[in-house]
Length: 98
Image (cartoon, rainbow, N blue to C red; front, side):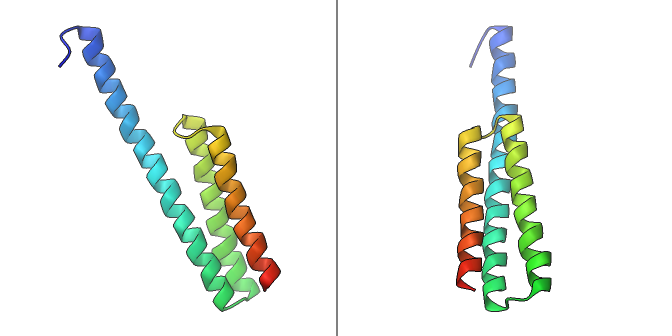
C-alpha cells in the first residue's frame, strides 16, 4: 500500500478507470453478441421487418457503444475499427447468402 498521498489518489483513480473500462468493454461484447443473434434470427426468417427492427437497431447500438468506448479511451481506435469492420462484414456476408 502506498504511503504518499498522491500515490494513494492515483491508486483510486486507476481503480475507477479500470471499472469504467471494464464496463465499456463488457457492453461492447454484449452488444456484439446481441447483433450476431439478430443476424441469425434474420437468417432464419429473412423479412424486411425483422431486418429493420433487429439487425439495423442492434448494429447501430453496437457501433455507438464502440465509438463511445473509443471516446473514453477504453479501447484503441484501430481495435474499434476492426470490430466495426467485422460486424459489417458479417452483415454483408449474411445478405449475400440470403
